[in-house]
Amino acid sequence: MTSSLERSPSLISEATIGKQKPHEPILTVRDLSVVFPDGNGGLEALRGVTFSVWPREFVCVLGPSGSGKSTLLRVLAGLLPPTRGEVRFRCADAKGGNGLPRIGFVFQQANLMPWRTVLENITLPLELAGVNNGAARARARKLIDLVGLQGFEENWPRDLSGGMAQRVAIARALIHDPDILLLDEPFGSLDALTRERMGAELLRIWQAHQKTVIMVTHSISEALFLADRVLLLSARPGRIKLDMAVDLPRPRREEMRYTAKFGKLARRLKEAIE
Amino acid sequence: MQINLVNKVNNAVPHRLRRRGSLWPVLLSVFLALLAWDMTSRLTNLPAFILPSPLQVGERFLRALSDGSLLRHTWVTFQEVVLGLIFGVTFAVFLGYLLAKSPWFERLVSPYLVASQAVPIVAIAPLLVIWFGPGMLSKVLICALIVFFPVLVNTVVGLRAVPASLRDLMRSLRASHWQVLRYLEIPATLPIFLGGLRIGATLSVIGAVVGEFVGADRGLGFLINVGRGQYDTALVFVAVFTLVALALSLYGGVALLESVLLSWQEWRRE
Image 1 (cartoon, one colour):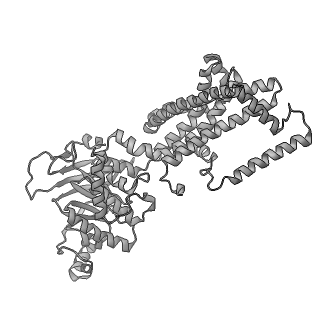
Image 2: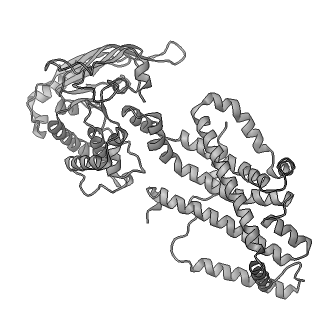
Image 3: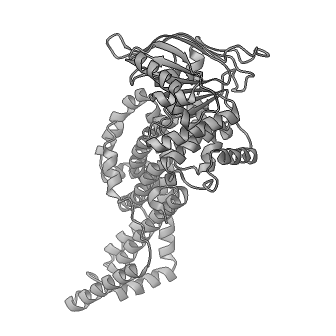
């Protein structure tokens, strides 16, 4: 359903523009504002948000609850039309059809279809795109290997733990080779240990697939561990308070969480939030 | 429309009626019931036109079976029930989809829908027979009418219960309306819809009998009338038991459909 995107003139995709220059952003957000109508003037969720994301960048959006992080992600995914401002994608080719970017979205909850098996949940985006079943299943099996769910192909989602279900959701978000991966607090509902393991897992997957990732989180250490850049949103209405590069070396390891550099960056974020 | 009604309808049938394991308890309870019936008819010494014994009913059953009348009447009622189900369900699903999708349309028609439920079907059955004749058509319409409402309500409730997060997923994947219907709305609505269909299937049998009582020259309802008129009470019993069997097999058919289509549901785990 692309109607909200088509109706909104401010969402422009330049997917058909030929070869992109290596240093051009894949996503440009300019002066984005979102107001939810609520009867008395509206609830302002985002105000004047401007930023760019470059190809293969891993960006974390951090902010207190109610700062419009999820709203921002919903606008980027085309689920919500912006009130003002512009969201511009520049994709390598018109992969999404109608010149729109292909989105891989991972929700807070795994959001699997309970009537589909693990494998069928992962193939869904390809089925919608009209890819034939054999090819879709073959690709899904590769992703099942990648996320470490071998042997669970024919299981129902009800049989999975929270972490396993979220791996299925990640595989599903990757299968149609999206231009951009949007993650909305994907590990928010997991326990702390699973959460750290999934973070490391995500890094490994990201390194294997070289996707552009925008991930919403409210955990400072998660943001620092994963991201190339952290965007810090202020409390409502959400504005960009800080755009900080995370110059920690890659590949990142668990021990890195305890280094002085990590601590310094964490303190900086912490101070900016308060 | 205030669809709170549906909870009542849904709760009327416990979610888990299928028996697991051995068939013995069922057979035993049937045997005991027959025994009690037989004892009653023996001890009270009532005449057969008031309470026939199981043996007399069994004998009447074989007679009706061998002269072909039972099958002929059952076939008529079966057709009425199934055709009524098909029409009622089709219309209910179609209208239910529109109602669930358009609040405007819902406000437009819901007063009539609710009012229509206040009219007892027994009261309008004579009207339908006057308008559409004593043949099969009026019975099919009565069945369709009685099936319509529970299926409609369950369709609307089922469609409304489709998780918003899955709708978001489909939108983020740029699914078309048709794809949302096929990949999300139909499978997500199916459990609640089939619950309505189960109720509808048994109601449809009631509808057919009501119609046949009012005016017909065929069908199991007609057979009951004939038995009553001739003091052939054993025949009434035969017709009643056949109706019960008909309703049970329809109910079982839907239950079978459920166990095939909804094998993913938690409580169906073997």
